[in-house]
Image 1: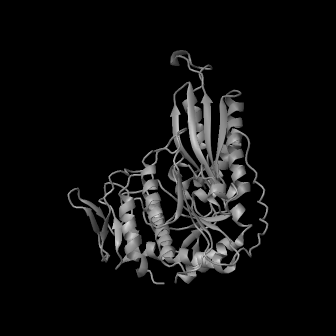
Image 2: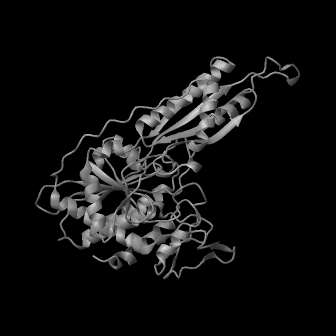
Length: 448
């Protein structure tokens, strides 16, 4: 198989899907967070129906299911493929105007002459990898939505291939397109029984040929601080300024352990918002780490900070509430090494060298793995996601179709002859300081 076989199909699909608004938004109690995501689900439903594929939409939660039945006589080992419908809320995502730059020459790209929006090659060195390739871009006023519509285009092209080549053997292939991944939906309404596979792969990420089998452990922390307000003229010995306590709490977080100073498998604390006045303050932050023991120590450290402030300023002034967001899917995937082994085989069969990196975020697979559906992640090949300078190399989408076909070949050949291995125990949490003074000293030492 050659990637040129699939370039026209994937390009046409991405141009069509990107023009459909599916931007999600942050919401506490409405799922899906935007009704427009159903528009793309219905388009995909119609396309699958036209191909003669078994499919259905669960309209209320906006989950699209489809299934290609096995066409060989050997043992059937159903596998799943999952991509998300929504695009990120970080920048405008409506009125997307995708277009194709043919045979990129390596220079700056004028996205919008009228508004003087230029993607400068010096600012985006990743462009140099794609000289000579066709690139799908926007007009610079919106994101493109290749995250994750490049994946949807590849999956749908794979389906078309199998339908038009009925003698190409494959096992049962279960598909799901889900909403709200970009705002923490994490396939919350995917019905695993209806889906039908015991193992699956999400397709969501940049860099063609890369895959992820680890993500962060992740929690959201909301720290509420109660102060005592009194007139500043008589405040001595009486006032407790919640704003001051919030600022002191933030300074207790070691500066090197923040996202702008970390990479690889290093965890962090990240303050995402502070609201404060003298009487009340709320500090919201996210906690991340790949190692379970270190992650639990990070969560415990927040309570340590709260306890230290309460001892200094009065009991129950600082309260910590932690909400689990997702966990490191590596804790589950370690039991099923064949999932990654087959993915690596498929990437190599497509003529690429597989590369693995811990994903410094979360995917639908993070949550699904802990719900009983182990899910490594295959990158979709888009670049500069969540921004106005996002682009998708057409050959990357075409090559991803090849990878998917080779992946299905692995399971058609090997059937269900796989065995799980136990995962290893996490390391114990490290010790942390307990008093305000010790915390300040620890912070100063870590920043030296």
